[in-house]
Length: 480
Ligand code: NAD
Image (cartoon, rainbow, N blue to C red; front, side, top):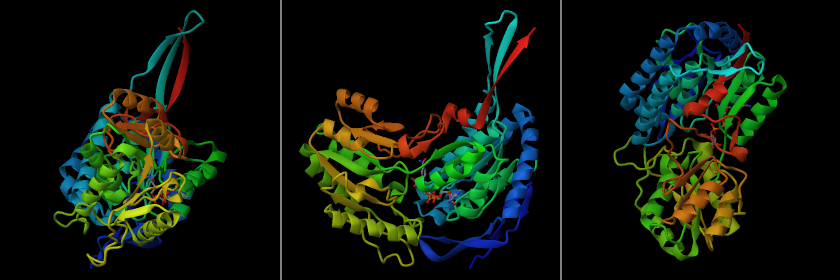
């Protein structure tokens, strides 16, 4: 049994906590991955103080040095993506291919932002007052709290930490307690870089203490958070009195619309990838499948056949296409939603059962409901599991209305061969990311990512827009 204890990283040192949490493999709960230190409140305050001191030192480090540090982190993540991807899948439960892909993608975020270090160009303007020149320049925001969820434990951290460091900020990283191993592995790589002590800190611990302390601190200049809407609201309430900058990506209830003229095999593939990859535990997952009457029956039949053939099992086993859900609490919640859906009158076509094989794993069969209505709780709440519901509709107009009828607005997709409908949907879908003939899950790393309505708050993440959050503008006037 592995009982190694992994420590926090603060002010350039590995530090034990007052307590630890055990990290167990959701594919085999007998597999203890390790124990992870929990930061005390005094340690959190100490790390914040160290970050405040380190940040201007890091910001004054030359561009080339900052570029090289980010580049090296990206190189190592990519070179070790097989090994680290395996560990990621072991603790989170996504398949090996998904785990390896996530670590590789994390490396790409560091490479992208390494290049952005060298692309920090300011602006110039003439003043309305003759003889006065104006310079417009971006400066680091300062000390950033990075608070992340468990479902993309390496990628979410990377798409926040890479731009934070690239633009000269110090980072206090609070990962989810369900997946501390990936956070620790990323930290271990960063810890070997020549960063001034205190520039980057790992503060493992629970949200209500460590996360809350970051959001409530007057010395933290911004919080970049990804997680649930409830937690986002709590963070906003605690951070608001200090007027600190927030960037928050939260829950979702994404729709994939399938129209009469869709290529049905493509629609089934998009629904399958969108709703069930990552065991459905994606903020971009399409849990509402809005299908017009003419293709409804064929679509449901083919998607059901596809789901019947899916191999569910331990994340690291050969041939497994869907791993377990992340823990027992999430499994119970998923099974409750199966009951809620049935009670509400949706027809369970396939799946939705806790699998007894493999043993000691939180595995469930992917579930598909049909004959759903958009006002059912099943179709209003974010479930965050391998459960999707078909909502039959008359035509495109009704499909668009139903797609937009949600408190969320992260992604939305349409499968159609009609240029007119595709174009109209792109313009009128109330979502931050719109996909045409593609799954709702799966985005690129060099362009903005984020949502609308309750899914998102504050500036966009990723791509060139990341500068909006991680920097602040200075406008300087000079009389020559
Ligand atoms: P969560 O909100 O429970 O936790 C997210 C993080 O916030 C964790 O690190 C947690 O410890 C911390 N936290 C909890 N309470 C806190 C508090 N009071 N103050 C500060 N921090 C606190 O979310 P989760 O269960 O880890 O992840 C699933 C959720 O994340 C889903 O709602 C999903 O949609 C969302 N998500 C969104 C995106 C996106 O980009 N929109 C991406 C991935 C996941």
